[in-house]
Amino acid sequence: MPHLTDEQLYQQIVQQDKKALEELYDRYERILFSFIYRFTKDAGLTEEVMQDLFMKLWQNKAIYQSEKGKFSSWLLTIARNAAIDQIRKKKVTEVEFQDHDAEPDLEIPEEVVVLKEESLIIQKALAHLPKEQQHVVKLFYFDGEPQRNIAKICKIPLGTVKGRLRLALNQLRKTLSRKGERGDIYE
Image (cartoon, rainbow, N blue to C red; front, side, top):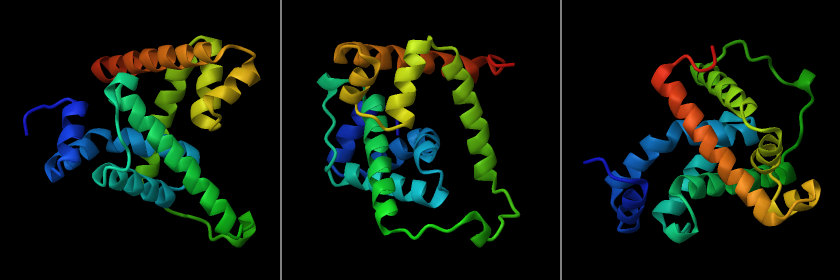
């Protein structure tokens, strides 16, 4: 498949093109897994959220509108909301075990190691952002606060919250892409 933009792949998915869905999945699998895992802290639940997310795309239950923003931002927002929904469902139906009730996990799967490395890279990239942007990103992406609540918490206009999130994401994208190109940005 020739290199297509995310939007072009999305349009092909709407037309039920399985190859386009596979391409989009391959393109976003690692970043989405890492992003969702930050919310769930559970690899199995993270995989469930990812499966639900791509099923929504396939079944046209999640509709992307280019005039509202970038595809990648929209996809991360959908992932964030799906993760929060799954966590809420899990809390309602799950019986909590105490730490001493669980069997110790003696093996560390390779996925967990990779996830920890990616998490460290993201944390270091976040540290390069101005404090105001760091705070808004933490509240929105890691604490799951809606933008309106963030505006109230920070006592700033909603437009400022949106602007800080947009600027932070652009800066993170640039920082992380430089990391990929040079490999030495955090060393």
